[in-house]
Each structure stands twice: as C-alpha cells, then as structure tokens.
Amino acid sequence: MENMYQTESLYDYEAQNILFIRRAIQKRIEQGIKQFAILPAGFWGRMTRHILEKEFHIEPQACFDNFSFYNQDIHPVSEIRSMCLSDTVFLVAVEKEEWRGLLYQQIAPFIPDSFIELIPILNAEQKRIFEESKKVHLDFLCPGFHKCSTTSLQAALRQNKNIFLPDVKETFFITEITESTHKKFRQNYQDNNGKSIGVLNGGIEPTYLFYAASVYQYFGRDLKILFLVRNPVEALKSAFKMSMREADKEGFELIEKYGKMCPDLMKEYIETYYWRFLYINFIRIYERYYPKTQIKIVLSEELIQDPSEQMETIQEFIGLPKELRIDYEEFPYENRGDTVFKDLGGAYVNHTLNMLRMNVESVPLYLRIDEIRKEVFDITTADFNFEQYEDIWETVYDYYADSIKSLEERMGRSLEGVWY
Image (tube, rainbow, N blue to C red; front, side, top):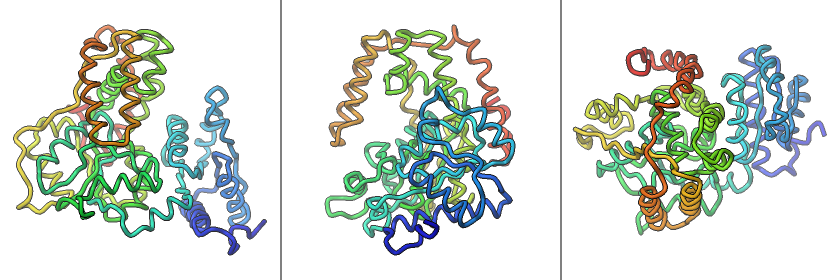
C-alpha cells in the first residue's frame, strides 16, 4: 500500500493527480503550515491522507466524509472554525468540477480562503481534452462577477469587430468538461472551415469562479483575467430580484417553500448566498494560477459612469492594439430588471421556461426561448422595490466589511465614496 501511487499500473491521469496532491501539500509546508484536514473523504481524499501520512509523515487533524458536508443539518461548523483558529489548511481533492464547486459553496462562509487548498483532480476524459491540440484559444476571460455588468460588457466588446465573443454569453464548458461539451464549445469559436474568428477571442463566463484550476489547465498561462465588481450589497439585491423573477433552481426552491414574497424568504436568500460577492476570495484563487499583472479588476459603477476611459483600459489590457480599439461614448447597460414573480403560478411558468432554456443544445433555439421567456415576464412578474424590507438590508454591509477592506488593499485604492 505504501507505494501504490508510484506503480506502473496506474493510469497516466491518476499519476498526474497524485503529483497535484504532492505539490499542494509541499507548497503549504513551505509556507509554514503544519496541520491539515481533508475533505471530502472519497477515493482522492483517502489518497491525499495516504500521501500526507506516508510521504510527509503528518497525521491529519480530521477527515470529513462527503455526507457531513452535503447535509447541512450535521454540518461540523464549530469544528471547522476551531481548526481555522489553529492554522489548519483544508485539502480539497474532488474529481468532478461540480462537486468541487458545491463543496466550496458549503465551506466558503466558514473557512477563510487562505485555509482552503483546492486540488485539481482529473479523470481520463478530462485529461485527453486538456492535452488535445485542437483546443479553443482565448486571449481573455471574464469569470465574474454575477450581476456586475458582465452581460453589458459582452454587448460592449461585441461592438468591436476585432474582438470575438460567442452569441451566447455563457457556454458553461469548464463546468462540465466532456468530449460532447468540448465539441460544442469549439463550434462557438470556429467558422464553417474550423478556423478561429476575430483578432482576439474572449469569454464572459461568471460561472467559472470555482474553476480556476481547470481554466488554467485548458486555456494556459497566457490568459488575461478580467473581473467586474460592484457594491456587493447592490449586487446581492440584483441577484435576488433576478432569482425571484426567473424562478431559477435556487430561487424556485425558496418560492415553493414560502409561497409568496416575505421577509423570511429574503432573509434565507441573504444568509444562503451572500458569500457569492465576497470578491477577494475568488480573486485570490485565480491569483494562485495567474500573476497579478494578468488580472484586472474593474468597478462596474465606474464602467457605467465613464465608459470611454474604462473601455479603453479594458481593450488595452486584453491586448488589442491601439489602432484596433474603438471609443465608447455610451455603455450598453443591459440585463436590467426590477420585477419579481407575481404569484406561485407565475413562478412555475418562469421556472419551466428557464429550465427548458438551459437544457437545449441549439443556440438559435436557446435565444428564441429566451425571447419568449422575457415576453412572458410581462404577465408573470410585477414591479418590486426594497423599501418595505430596508430593515433587513441595513445589516448586510457588515457581511462584506472585511472583504471590501481586503479588496481595497489588493487594488491599492479606497472605495469610499463609491461603495460606502
């Protein structure tokens, strides 16, 4: 058993996964870390423990199983927090990207980002795709943030004929890497002859926040990373309205639970999803793979207020030569919405259309369903404002105070007067 991860019988991708685990542990030890916990305790969790014990002679402080982390009723929160106080690093070795994302969602509110080590684990199919010669080349990627003008940025960049972005903003490829999704992804970026389109190719993919390792493995080290950020309280409000309007999976679960818009529904949404706008946590994960010189942070508020200057700096950052840049007198402020579900019946209709849209293969059909869905909103939704719920939102800024301070330090500027 001691040398099982060094045998020739191992598949090549398994040997690479073991190398990832070794490097992750070694890096943390070099940083002075002496205590580790492992989660979840699947095959690669057990392998991580074996390497930690046999190669590095370190006994893990704890090994949490999958059930403990996916069942919130028995979530070991107090134990996790006490470990953070003792400088314990949590090693997260999960094969499926969606599981890794879900696990990060579960632990992010309780564990500071610096104590989480996400270890990229591949399967054979993913490894073949990562090593394939016919991969899509991207010059830049915007992996966030949700509700921070990413749709508007897509529309703005598409105005420049020298920049290519797909018709559909989010392809979701990295969130589910298979031969089938890879083929579909390539088709988004190639003409009928299989050649790349545009002087520069880019992607606007807010769902890629959890997938920095896979982004790096597929697109390589030269990729420029662009983050759009916005006052997190306002972003959370906007996300809440969209979720209640579209009745997406997360919003629909709350709508079904409470049956109507009410303070308890809103409080549960805030408590469950506020962490999505702890911007610095996700930026730091990307900084593990890309140097700060390849990462740019742009304030959504300033992009809207001064599009000419901000879009000039964005075009320069992504590598577009000056003679190919265009001036933006106005910013195409899109995807705005101030309505939420009108009643439970309307929410059912919106949810059905949303799920149908997300599961179609054809891009034209996706866009057509999206048009129909927005027309239906005129019947199934109603105007909404937060005035009667302001007492709930008054304390939400406290959730973000430390994160904003860290972001200010990272950007080298104060956000006073912009966000607070």
